Image 1 (cartoon, helix red, strand yellow):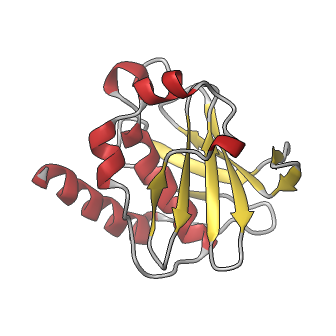
Image 2 (image 1 turned 90 degrees about the vertical axis):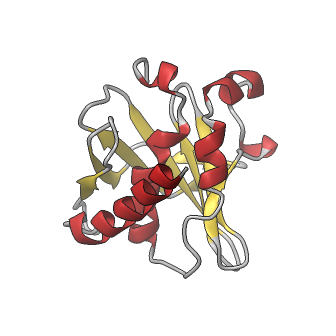
Image 3 (image 1 turned 135 degrees about the horizontal axis):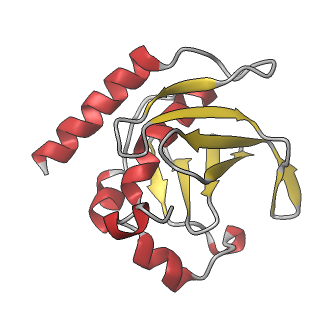
Length: 163
């Protein structure tokens, strides 16, 4: 457990130092995830995600050592921003709640994959460790970088190879 906490602290510190671009005007956000997925790049998506019958701002998250990509849909709400993080095989949400940002299981109304399949891929230890990632409000770019660093740890090891 101490190793995971230390890993998460190092990830956040390197994210602060490693992000070398903003997602503005077609530029990418990139950095090192410090996971087996390798370096990440986040760009504006050409295919927007539709959530709750609304087209939302969408990003593509790509890792150097993974073939597939992950899509991130941004849900702007009154008090905070939530993110639906979705691949072909796994989906989850990151959201703020009373100035705390962390992971949660995807709401039923946003779900596209079967619950049982999603739950068997979910690493429960990492899930509970990520319930609170940060407590201070961050910019959208910083939150996207945190998602890129933390998301790979949510997937059980036996499924990471097929991701």
